[in-house]
Image (cartoon, rainbow, N blue to C red; front, side):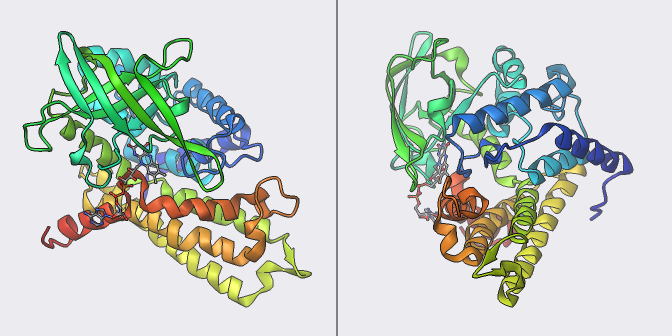
Length: 402
Ligand SMILES: Cc1cc2nc3c(=O)[nH]c(=O)nc-3n(C[C@H](O)[C@H](O)[C@H](O)COP(=O)(O)OP(=O)(O)OC[C@H]3O[C@@H](n4cnc5c(N)ncnc54)[C@H](O)[C@@H]3O)c2cc1C
C-alpha cells in the first residue's frame, strides 16, 4: 500500500498551513470543530468563531472541494482532501466541510428537487442540521425505532420521541428516521426525512418540543425531541419510502471512518507538550518527571498507529476501494484512544490541577484537559459507539459469527 501523497498534494499542504496561520485563531475557545465532544460546544462565542472561519473556507472554495462540480465543488482528489482535513484537524480548526452524513445521503439518495433545496444552502453553511436517529429504546439497536410516520395526502404525519440529538437547540433542520410501515420487518419499514425544525424567525415548528439534556458540567449539549403530529411534505423524504434504513446506513459509514481524528489528537498532544514546558508543579517542570516522559512517549506511539490506520483508509479511498472494517478500525481506534489513552494521560499528568475548570486561575489550558477527559468518557456512545465498531471488525474483518 502506497501511503505517499503526490508532490502536488504536499504543496497544497503548505498552502493550507499558511491559510491557517493567517486565518485561524481559537481566541482561547476549545471549539474543537463545534463537535459535541468539545467543552465549548454550547458557547455562542465559540460557535461564532467557528462560523466565521467556515465562511472563509466557503469564500476560498475549499468548503465543498470534494463535492461534484455540478454542485459547486471541484471533485478534489482524495489526496488533496486528506491533506486539507489533516491540516485543519491538526490545528483544531472547524471540520471544514458540510456534515458528511446528511450530505452523503442527499447526494446519493435525494431527488433533484431535494438536492436543489439543500445543497446550495449547505455549501454556504446556511443550514445547521441536527440528527434524529436515537430513541430511548433504540440506540445501538437503531432499527427498533418506534417514532411513527403516517401517510396523509401529500404529507407524512410524524409522532414520537428522539433522544441525544446533539446541539439541536441551535439547529434549523433535522434529519430523522421514522417507522412508516409497522408491519414490515424492522429494517424495511423505516423512512428517512428532512424535517424543518424552526421557522425563519427561529421559532420551533408546530408540534415539535425540545427538552434539554445536560452533560456532567451542566452544559446543554443534547435534547430530547418530542414530535406530536408534525407534518412533513412527502417531497422531503430522502431516498425511497420504507427504504430509509439503507440511505441512513450510507450516512453512518461516512461517520465511522474518522480519518481526521488521529491528526486532531496529534495536534492536541503537541499543544499539551507546549503548555507543559512552562508548567511547574511543586516548583519543578512537569516534563522532568521520568514517569511523565514515559507516559507521553507511549501515548505518541499510539497516536502514530492511529495515524497509519487513517492513512490506510485514505489510501484505499484514493485507489477507488471502499473501506469497511478498515474504516471501522480507524474510527474505533480514534474513540478508543480518546477514551482510554489520551485525555486520561493528560489528566493524570496534571493530577489535581486537572479538576480545575474553565475560568479557574490555576487551571492548566484554561480547564480543557480535565473537562475533555470527563467528556471523552462518552466516546463509547456517539456515532454508534465503540461496541458497534468492534462488531464490524469482528464480523467483516475477522469473519467471526454474528
Ligand atoms: C456524545 C454523543 C452524541 C450523540 N449525538 C447523537 C445525535 O446527534 N443524534 C442521535 O440520534 N444520537 C446521538 N447520540 C446517541 C448515540 O447514537 C447512542 O447513544 C448510541 O447509539 C448508543 O445507544 P444507547 O445510548 O441507547 O445505548 P444502548 O444501545 O442501550 O447500549 C448500552 C451499552 O450496551 C452496549 N451494547 C448494546 N448493544 C450491543 C451489541 N449488539 N454488542 C455489543 N455491545 C452492545 C453498548 O455499547 C453500550 O455500552 C449521541 C451519543 C453521544 C454519547
